[in-house]
Amino acid sequence: MEEKLNLVQEWDKTFPKSKKVNHRKVTFHNRYGITLVADLYEPKNAEGKLPAIAVSGPFGAVKEQASGLYAQTMAERGFLTIAFDPSFTGESLGTPRYMASPDINTEDFQATVDFLSVQENVDSEKIGIIGICGWGGLALNTAAIDTRIKATVASTMYDMSRVGAKGYFDANDSEEERHNLRVTYNTQRTEDYKTGTYKRAGGVVDPLPEDAPFFVKDYYDYYKTKRGYHKRSLNSNDGWNVTGTMSFMNMPILTYTNEIRSAVLVIHGEKAHSCYFSKDAYNDMIKSGKYTENKELMIIPNAVHTDLYDKLDVIPFDKMEKFFKENLK
Image (cartoon, rainbow, N blue to C red; front, side, top):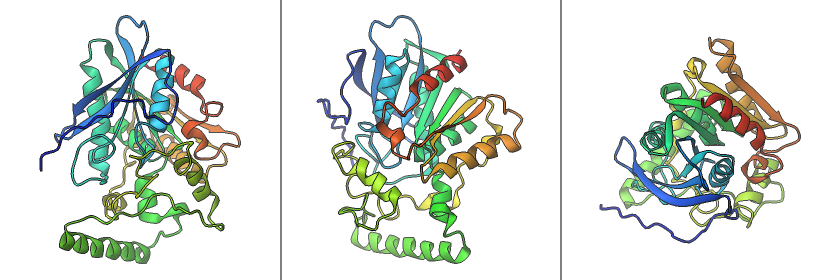
């Protein structure tokens, strides 16, 4: 099947366009030959070679949502940034659509480093990454394998392998629960192959049940309202394929994070349902690692998970700017 790029030209982000930066779309390919599409933001009137940051996430979102806001804001602060759509999603190519992979998605981040490293106005020795939500975990996984990355921020992070294998709050952490999930996945694989289609898992539940847990309400408030809805976002619409995230459940992504030598800043909201992911990931990095002095955990008082998607008075951009300026040098 021949894939063709069909890039949207108008500004269709969930946030207003900044007058302080220039914006354009760029394309590049990853190691598997998949073409990725990104929004590139650069400070107006910038001169010389700039430090650069690649941004992605949340998991199931698109670059027109939180990652674009992060990228544009960091560009206002002097960095050249790109927010990209992962393989199989958004404007990026890759078929079948709406699949995820711990390997390919880590490679997506590395491909952005490839791209940034050869830009004439980028200092290739000053490249960082930001991962939001599930891409926070993938950012840490990328930092563990890519020595070109000098600084990493994981914001309101999920460990997608952990939640995929154990469920929320590790509530389904048993061989029996995992077996049942494997049966469900593989039954669906047979059906998909038979029909030649891929059943979608559904995005954020809509309409919202009255008895929904708070974190579901939190997601609804972002993905299903004009605050964060986007027509290409999986979470805003029909979600991943049912089998789209299957491989995460037995491919741990944070195995060697204690060997990351470069700087890491982990940021999370105190009241977020997901805060345990960041606390545990940070502890795992420092409890047996030799490179602990440049690792930091920042807990934002009273903030919930999606506060760190788009709330400019909550996201600690001052701290992030200082972190990158200190470590991209």
